[in-house]
Structure formats: structure tokens, C-alpha cells
Image (cartoon, rainbow, N blue to C red):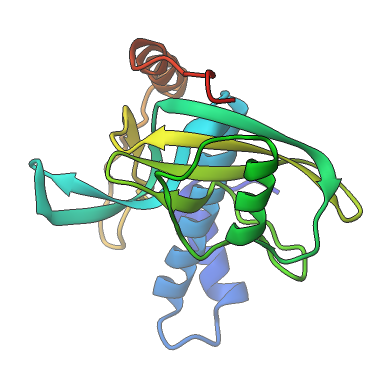
Length: 213
């Protein structure tokens, strides 16, 4: 089923899904925001940026570490990378288990301070771009490549803290009482232009070092 506009979809959510909420419009807006974030992540993944994506990281404003704000998605240069071949893991798949698997691959990660995280929960819920280690200059994420029963194959990427692109997801539409709203995407080719710009910047930043892999 399709809708003529974001506002029309939000109105359907207000009337048919969130009719019980104290603030039905706000609840519908938040639901739409979640859908936008899901679409954005899988668009970035389909464009080949899965190993560059960080989710909800705090970024500095005006080069001032005292002023930060979280962005939904940021893209970071890959400094080094390691694949973990298909092997059995007991769920939940935690930071400690990931670090032991990296030790078995002789992959250097001692410079990264461990963070409490679960790539896969005990119930098998996946956390995309799961960050499980940090240093002053880098952080590492885990991505699940394949699952067969209790066996998993993963890719571990160590990323620079400094992004080459960021994405903030906003729900843009026409407010009630207004005839026209802001439309930052009037031209359909802007999405493709954005994709190509990110690919260009990815190729222009620090190249990936596989020497430690």
C-alpha cells in the first residue's frame, strides 16, 4: 500500500495504530522516524558502506570536545580489518568472545579498550555495527556475515574516530495549517548524488591497512 505523502502516512498511523496514545501525533512521528532510520541504514549497506557505518556516535562540534551531539549514522575510514571464519559461538555473542576469536586470528587489538556489548543477544537479536572497543584515535565494530545454527562468520573493522560523512534522519512534512512544507529532496537524483559523493570521500581518505589481518 502506498501513500501520497509522509503526512498522509502519519495520519493513518495516528488514526489506526496510535489512537490509544496520549499524544497520537508524536507517537506516529517517532514511529516514522524509526522507519526512516531503518531505510537509511540498509541503503548505506546496499551502497557498500556496511564496514564504515557507526550508529549513534557522539561527534564534536566546532572541534570542541566539550560540545558533542549524537548523529544517527556516520561513515568512517577503515584502518584495519579482520574476518572471523564460520565457527560455533555460544550466545550471547559478547565482547569477551569476540576478543578471544580475534586472538585466535592473531589480530592486534590491545590498543582498544573493551566495551560491554553483544553482537547477538541470547535470543539471537542482531545489533548492527556493534561497537565493542575504543581508543583515543579509533574504535572497532563487528558485523555478522553468515549464520548457520550456532555458527557465525563475522567481519571486524577498526575505524578512525573522524568521519568522512554523517547522516541525520529527520521527518520532513507539512505541518497542520500550512500549505507547503520544507522539501530537501525535490530532485530524485539527489539520493544518487549523495551516494556517489560518499563513495568519492571514502576513496579519498586514509586507505585500509590489512597488514595486521
